[in-house]
Amino acid sequence: QVQLVEFGGGSVQPGGSLRLSCEISDFRLGYYVIGWFRQAPGKEREGVACITTTPGNTNYADSAKGRFTVSRDAATRTVYLQMNSLKPTDTAVYYCAVWTLGYCGGAMNHLDYGYWGQGTQVTVNS
Image (cartoon, rainbow, N blue to C red; front, side):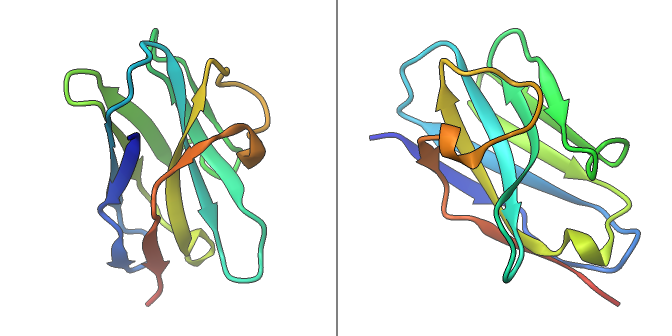
């Protein structure tokens, strides 16, 4: 059974950094797309960044460009989201998700992703 588990959420002051991890287990396909999404209270779920398992193509939402970096460790099937220069508007529950045989580019649609983690809360405030 495919499982995605996120780690690394927490509270941080504006300008601070957090690194989220997403561990993916029992996924037998060699190629898939891992996306990071977030959802703030009262708002729709939005895509933040994505990465392919191979060759590691990445894509970022405009809100994440220059501040967030997505990476993966193929050996451990772990995907990371390094978030720097955090702002209060980054406060949300962050989810990792998998899209099988998809692509990483352009606008991210959460409906394309069929497997989801439970989410981890990120709070940015002073």
